[in-house]
Image (cartoon, rainbow, N blue to C red; front, side):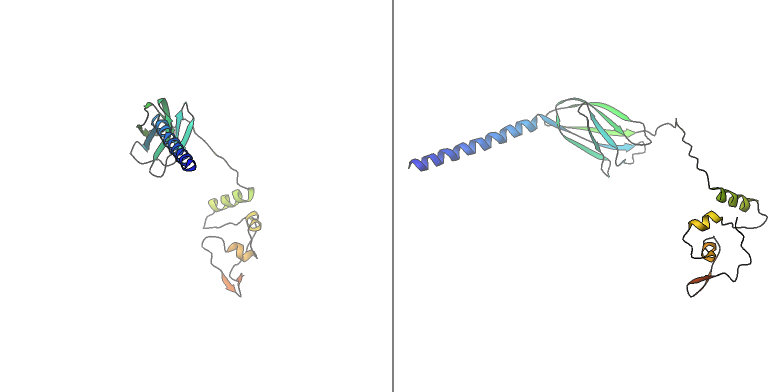
Length: 188
């Protein structure tokens, strides 16, 4: 009989501990809030992958394919939300998170003014520049294939290299290109 009484006491204690844990868990959850929102541009098109940062907490997330975001388990208090997206001016706003409630932020980003100009230059290999000049200054239609290009491609023979030019079609004999129709080739 004493064993049954002890078992009942242990069971009651276990149930009380479980219910106390649930109450504390709910209380802890109620002290936190949630922030949701959507990020769009000025024409109301969504911006997937926009970076949303919660400060001073420092959490940063990206918007989904619909431009939406959710930040959960945010302690009650004052925060700043900063939204950035390449090519757009940053969006920043302040908000108050209340325990157990959802704060909403809809960010509309404006296209950034062009204040920087980037110029990318790349030199063509000497043979290509020379070939382009020959084509440009020719009196008739000319296609030039520089030696550097011929040797850089996986050609089995010169006919395969010439076959890469626009407007050239090759006759193949047993899988190999036939050069009988070309009068003269001179390397540039």
